[in-house]
Image 1 (spheres, one colour):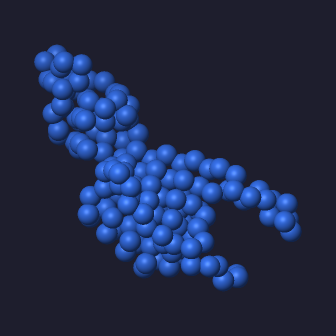
Image 2 (tube, rainbow, N blue to C red; image 1 turned 60 degrees about the vertical axis):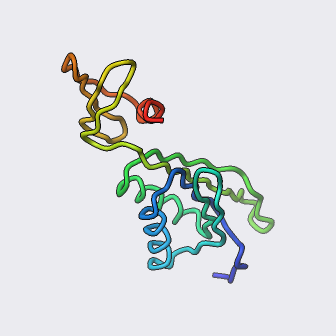
Length: 147
């Protein structure tokens, strides 16, 4: 494998509303696994962007973040260039991870009703405190109510 310049990156890991624990975990994980490196770290308004040297490692790291910390994970790609030798398209990947501001057992106000969070997976299972009715809703809906 040829040596790449220090500022070379194939993707961006966007972390929004991070905790110190989350940022430390990311930095240690990338350093200890040595399958990629951080080309640049940039502070943005509500988080941090990590420029990572391997898009495949970046996508795997995003899944690990979701499994360990729970949150919203979005992966997108855009055409960066075309390889002159092979005519293959080369993409830059962006992985957005936003940890959830709530956890199992929290009580929130949703549409004027108190609800308790029972489970958080791809969707959240909630229970209406007044009626006892259980339902599943998207994490994005819950996140908007928390803000």
